[in-house]
Length: 366
Image 1 (cartoon, one colour):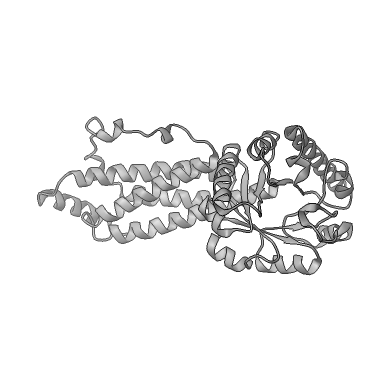
Image 2 (spheres, rainbow, N blue to C red):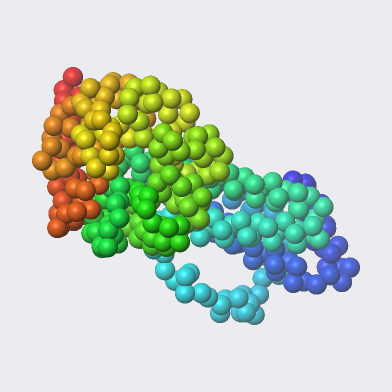
């Protein structure tokens, strides 16, 4: 990173050579911006997800930034004369979700580091290369945090809504989100691409507003286009490895499975979760025989990753599915065709929560 005395001498040499003092103001402002943005991210890593590793990386980055934030740069600060203090944008006044807040601050840090990287080349010989590497570290930190956040939310999720085509698509999904739903998959195999794109964009924004995960069925390109949290793949869709290459490490990938062989293959290929079913015959999977409870029992004993029982599950048979060993379920018609989606969602949530409590107490008792 260079010796700090050398840095000080360079700064003084720059000014004595008639360089514009605006350079020091630019560096000072962007060092402040990067440090502030990192502190906001660090607080969530520390208190929100209790990750000592990610909080530690934020702290190390802040300390490195502080070591470059010399008295020479600070002395160039002119807050009263800074026109930027009067500039604002409506989007900066409101954050619709935690994810948006974190992404906004990562963007703030990355933009500031890029500014320092370029202007720093005029200030100190080591500054450009140092801040280039620091920017890459922040990109890695962002991917790690987003992946961690999504995976933790997935682990806490026990009810999963898979949509079906409906003229009331958005009101139904929002009603379910109001009932506590935290995972939505957009599925529509009949609409044209333009309609799918518009629907996915609206549903993604809706899920962001409620802090829920949003996945797209089958289409990796559509998931990328709307910045979804991931994709759900059927057995005939693209390989998980290709989807991972396209989506990156920070997004979720699920896979439908109907038997133990498909389950083991999905796990080996790196799926984040799997669908297990269909438990009952369902028009959603017309012509596909029910996997029944034997496969649920197999998943209970053999799946190391989260799995959701799916296929014909409703309020009338939910307890049968839970008694067979499931503690996560995915539903379609039970919510999409409900007269009161919020109440139905709350019923599912209450039953699943009760089951978790009972199993936790049983486990604690020995």
